[in-house]
Structures are given as C-alpha cells and as structure tokens.
Length: 435
Ligand SMILES: Cc1ncc(COP(=O)(O)O)c(C=O)c1O
Image 1 (cartoon, rainbow, N blue to C red):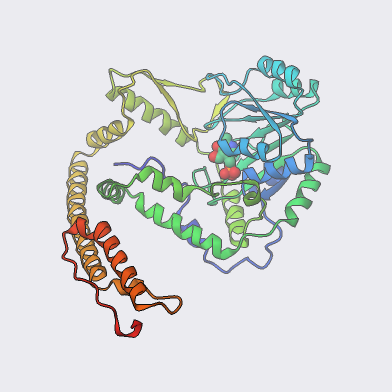
Image 2 (tube, rainbow, N blue to C red; image 1 turned 90 degrees about the vertical axis):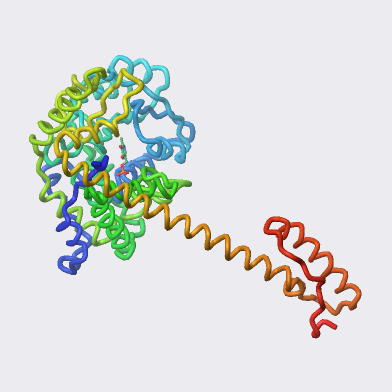
C-alpha cells in the first residue's frame, strides 16, 4: 500500500536540525528564494502572518472580510477571533479562483476592506483582474499561497498587496512548519515585523520533539512498514487517517490566535532558511502527476476522473484533486491495484506480511483483554473481602455506626461488582483499629 502523503523533506534535512552549527545568529532569517522579492518576513506559519496583518490593520469589530470559498477552517476562525464578519465568494472549478465580476458584486454588497484569495492545490493564475476590482473598492488583496509554493515557481503575484506562504508538514519544501509573508507596503510590513518581534519564540526543545515525530512518520511511510502499520491499527480498532492527521496538525483545538502569536525557534528558522535556499521547482513532478492520472484512468475504465483547475495559468501539482462521477469509486483500491499491476510479487509479499501482522496483533489484543478481565476480577474480589479499606472514618464514630456503614458499603459492592463476576461475599468484619 502506498501512503497518501510523503513528507517532502529528506532525512538529511531532518538530521540537520540536530546540528549545533549556525545557531549563534538566530535573529536574522535567510529567506533564500524570497530574497529577490519585495519585503518578506518569516513567521511561525502562514496563519501567523495573516494574524499579524489583521492585528496591525485593527479593523473595527464586525467589519466585513471576503474569502474565496475554498480555504481551511482556521483561516476563517482567525477573522472571527478578530471580530470580523466573514463573506465568501464562489470559485470557478476551471481556474480555482473567483470570477472578478462575482468579487465585484460581493464587494459592492459588503464594502469589505480585505479580500483573501487562495491559489489552490498548486494551481496559480494572475490576480491582476481581482486586484483592479479590489482597488476600485479600496480593499486590500491578500493572496493565500499556502498551497502554491514550489521553489521559484510562484513567489507572490505582483498585483496582490500581501502573499502568504506555508511550509507546514504537508507542504512542498516543508520546514515542519513556518511561513513567509510578502508585502508591497514597506510601512505596513515594518509594523508587522515590529509586532512579530514582540511575540515569544518557540523553544528548540519543542521543535526537536516535533522533528522526532516527523522522522518517525517518515520511517512509517516506507510502503511495507506503512501497510503493516495500517493493518495493525485497523486490527486495534484505530483510525490511521485520524492518527496521522493528529500528528501532522500544527495547532491544537480551541482559540487559534494565541497559538499563532509566536516566532519560530532558532532551529526551525535555520531549517526554513536551508529549505528556501535549496528550493527548486521541478517540472518532472507535474509530468509524474499527469502520468499517475493517466494510469489510474486506464485501469478504471468504468469511472470518469475529471481534473479541476485545468484553466489555471500554471500548476505545481501540490495536490491533484479529481472529480469522480461514479460514487462507487474507492481511491484506496486504485492504489492497491496499481501496485499489484506494477510489482505483483512485492504486492503479494506485502499483503501476506500485513495479514500476518494483523493476525499476531489480534492474538496480542485477545491476550491483553483476557489479562485485563482477570485483573479486574482479582481487584473486585479484593474489594469484596476488605470493604473497610474504603471506610476510613474522618471523625471518631460509634462502633454501631461503623458496622452499619460497612454493611451498606458491602451492599454497594455486591450490587456494583459481584453480580457481574459472581463472587462470594463474606460478612464484613471490623478491623481492630476501628473498634
Ligand atoms: C489554503 C490554505 N491557507 C492557509 C493555510 C495555513 O498554512 P499554515 O499551516 O502555514 O498556517 C493552509 C494550510 O494548509 C492552506 O491550505
């Protein structure tokens, strides 16, 4: 089985985190490919950059803000935590961008002063027409490029006021987190830099712990380990997707803005600089994405896989979503089938091995359940024979009171536990020290 996601970071990059070299000058961050651009600032994540921007704008409560209609939940949560009223403009599946006319209509209706447009799934097109509409309404255009970074492929649209980039774990050239905000307005960027500089730094200990988690995830994504792991987790009744998702998640549930208001740790900043200095777009990736779709379509003759974003001006294929017209389609089966067709022997071996692992795990699980049941039984019978252990008197009590309480407690134990395991109950004897 192939993992759904491979972390886009080499083991050498991961191991470089441990090196003590170059940590002395941790205040300045070398932004590599972004050096040639307008003002650019590093931040803990793209969302941290956006939070800093909204904070410096200090819009009055209930001010409207417009988002292109496909984005991540917490980008919207940030606006809510800034007391803003959110509005959404639909995206065209051909470009994955809103039509400028639709944006114009919504700006007329809401008078929003901030518009956030996401370049989705690696599809990138010019935002010139959207910028013209925003200028007409006196609104700032924020380009969300969290899914669009691929080396020098796209470093922010010249027409947008701000562009946000993400280097989170599931992104191209990941630094296991980190973001960059690029801006046209030097004064506003200085205000953002001043604000970010007041935020506390994350510690290197936190980052090293995070790196270890991702190193484990990288090892777990070797196909045969991944297959065995997936089978084992499902034998244990665990949801592998949820587990991987929880590991990859950068922030916890609850209010997001306090979590965003931090700077990167020195080691994370150094890793981001390393990644940005070596980030080169690869055309081969696009070719391989197209080839995969072609292969999948050939094996699924009765299913129509429809690409989206086909009218975008360029595509780095961060993801390649497809619209599936046949609801019975199961992508997992396609991957299994593809592997079976490419490497029949490897597939058979991995399949058998993972079945064996699942069987072994089932046995271990049954044994654990038996031991647990046995221990519970022992504990219950222990409770039945020593009810007074739970009856430490807080103040001197009469022997008759103690005896009646012990009897009541014993009754409680009988009802709660013994009926379940069928134990015998002795009449409680009072311990000598209570008499
Ligand atoms: C469209 C979009 N915007 C913003 C973000 C947030 O990026 P970060 O995790 O760096 O805050 C993401 C992350 O996946 C995203 O997909």
